[in-house]
Length: 435
Image (cartoon, rainbow, N blue to C red; front, side, top):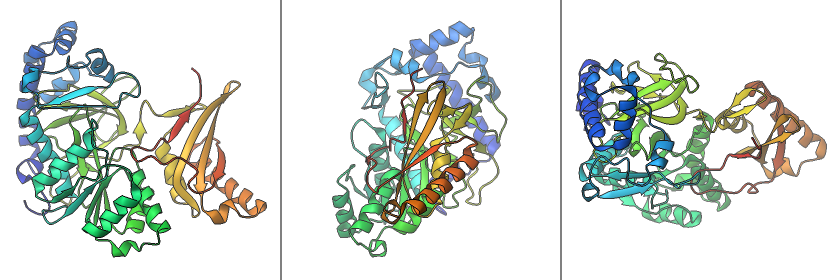
């Protein structure tokens, strides 16, 4: 390990060598998927393609996409490329929008996963001297286990705290001298709120690093978490269908998340036309896994909106960097013809003194028009201020949001702690429209 780089051979590989490795691994993956996964064989046959047709990375765009619907139709094991006896771990999504998506790992897959997580944890500054507190829920969700095994691979100590029980989380941080915190960014704010309420000085904690993922979050929210918990907060990205956490993560320069391109080939497409966009364009991230044995994914549509930066990073890694996700193409709200992402509103709110980073967007249809109401928690001073001052504050917030979105919203100020807290992902949007 050198200069906070876990795997210099692959993380700093010259692009020409990296692309050659990607092509070899892609061809092996396509052969395995075509031979062992009926869904892929059928998709390829429909397009009149065989794996041998892929002779360069540019041929990737000829291949069919994989969607969440494919995973649901083939529930539970239809997308597995190895016999079940070779699968040593099964995870799944929560299944809140239908049947859960089930994913599997071989022994080799778990080793790959552990090393990919060790990469982004090392990039964030975690070493074998750290004590890492994991406040993700353990269970079918991949987040906790991914970070757990990555931590052990580095040789750091793991506190498998799991989610919830915020006061106990803080007590353990104090008593066990936790140096790195793993959770969603919204839960980090919840922890910061409770630390304030308990009158604990964050400087009295041993925390140095925060590794946050699982939901989109803004730079403003990062600044708030860093200043309130006195840590360096880094973003990481993954999804269970691809591997779990470990797809990408920030280094300490925080100029985007390095994608482990020796394991995943990223593309950016226009979510409407599905056309591959040129480097630097903003669109939907599509990922192809090229190292997974049990559950290969070919051109998986993540629905996450981002862009890719190919210029060299000061850290020495040659891997492409993805920007923080702006939101999801399927979670994106269209209000009066304007695309609205929760992260845009969060950016405005966190910059306003008196607004707390707890908010909810409620969309309703009144007659033929869509109406967006933004419920924002504010400090007690503002909530209990005289009516005239409160009205002026509310109008100022509405104007700021309007100037960023280009669409009018109604703002409702609510008192502290009135928006439900979630120990996993925050529920930011409630869409009451009937389509």
